[in-house]
Structure formats: structure tokens, C-alpha cells
Amino acid sequence: MQEHTPEFEDDDDFDRPSKSQMKRDMTALQKLGEELLELPESRWEPLALPEILYDALKAAKKITNFEGRRRQMQYIGKLMRKIDPEPVREAVAAFKLGHAQDSLRLHQSERWRERLLASDDALQEFLADHADVDIQQLRNLVRAARKDAANVPEKRSGRAFRELFQFIKAATPADDADAGDGHA
Image (cartoon, rainbow, N blue to C red; front, side, top):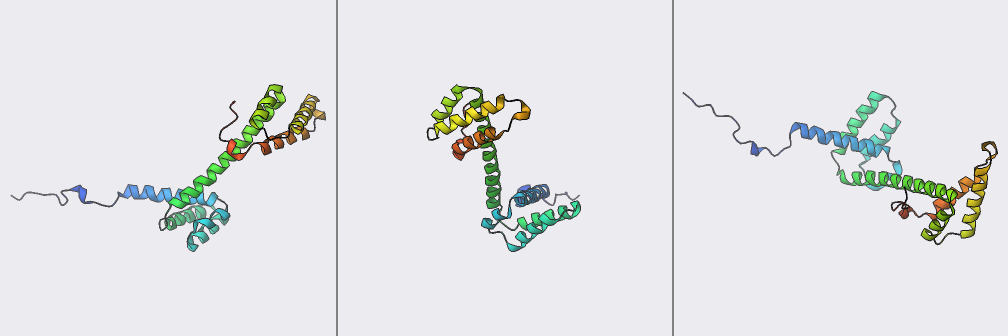
């Protein structure tokens, strides 16, 4: 009787990833292409994308039909396999981080405005943290915003409130936004 030996005795001889892993990688590149599509076109230029990928991205921005857009995104994913995805990932991450920092800075400015309107102690804290601001202008803006807030809602203009916010936003450097104001 003849012994049956399997055709492949050692599975360690395979050097390629599994079919499922290849599909996951392709899907990840397609998602990266979708994220790249969300960036402004001016952010695409430093990436030195191939012309065919650049054209495919521009075409995808114009497509409104769901199925057409899905197919175009698959095509973009296919084109993305031919380039190094790391610079694209870095550009997308930098863009998202910039938006998050801008949002954080605005929230921080809003918190300072609320605190400045609530108490005079906050004014001293703000001046201690931001020594280079015009103290008199800040006090005038706070006083005007408090006076406006004391009016009945129909008579409020909101102008002083907005001006105070713009002043605080200008006084808060962008790199301070990640540090926060120390209060939540």
C-alpha cells in the first residue's frame, strides 16, 4: 500500500501574505485615498502624486452618484498601491491634527471669555499667563461685555462679547492651545 503524503508538508515556505491580509491592506489604502480626498487640493501638491492618481482624485471630487463614487474610490485604492503610502498618511495626520489644534484653541478662548466675564480674579490670571497683552484694552472689553450681558436680551448687541473673544483668541498663541488654560 502506498503512503499518502500531503503535497505541502511545510507551511513555512509561503512568503506572501494571506488573501485576507491582502484585502485588508487594499481596503486600508482605499480608506487612505478617501481621507486624501478630504484634504484641500493644495495639500496634494507637496506629496508629488502621480498624475494619474491626481486626476483620479480630482474626478472623484466631482462624482455625486454613490455607485460611481464607490467605483472611483476602488480605482483610487488600486492606484494607491503603486505609491509609497507613508507620506500620504503623514499629510492626512498633519491636516487632522491642525484642525484639532485650531478647535482646541477656539474652545480655550471661549473658556477664557466665560471666566473673564464671571470674575475679576480670572482677569488677573489671564494677565499673568499673557503678560504681553494691552491691559487697558482688555479691561475695557471685559467691562463692555459685562455691561452688554446685563441688558435684557432684546437690547444686547453682542458686539463687545465678540470683540472680547477676538482679543483673547489673538492673545492666545497657537502653540499654547495644547497646554490648555489649566481649568476645565
